[in-house]
Image 1 (cartoon, rainbow, N blue to C red):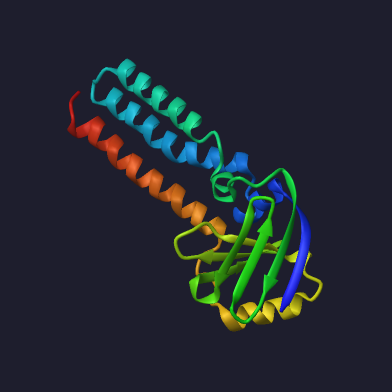
Image 2: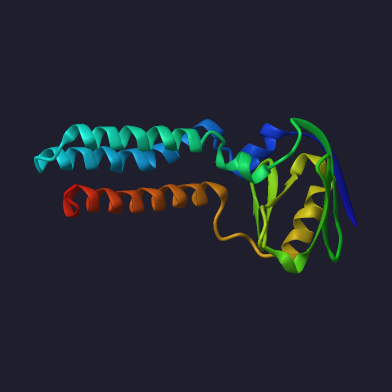
Amino acid sequence: MLRGSAVVERRELELAVAGGVPPMLQRVAMIAAMGVPLVCMTVLRALRGGDVRVALLTSAVALVALAIGMGTSISRRIVGDVAERSDASYELDEVGVRVENASGSVRVDWSAVAGVYQSPSAFLLYVHGRSPLVLLTRAFHDLPSVRALLAEKTTPARFGPRRLLLFGCGMLFFFTSLAAVFFAVVARV
């Protein structure tokens, strides 16, 4: 059994979950992913002779709603109700992993772990049907043994957090662009 413990700060967990991308940059990326197509919709409406004021108002309302909706970053939503600063302990054994912090305790069998991503500061264990578990590397004194156990019991994650964030922004951009083209070209509102 491998054990580790550390004092954990909320911001540290948020950065680990997002692959080092700061929360403010996450929000800016999401807003830009939807803002660019909305601005393009406004330009298309202007080029087609539509009412530019309505398009500008629609774009402005959508961006304000998005900015309010994205008031919390994606990583903050994943981390959830973790105190600003708390103690955390980790136990890894042949059956699974147990994480205990101020929010409670969770035990996950290795069979439920879909993949593991290692960043310089943490291991992210992607668990089927729930948020990833964050194991801070600095909590373990015997890091090579932890890496060996994780390599034996799990598979590496195919995508890291940065790639997933980029994919999410890309999907938002694509579907917002599709909607913008529909409203600007097809629907003559």
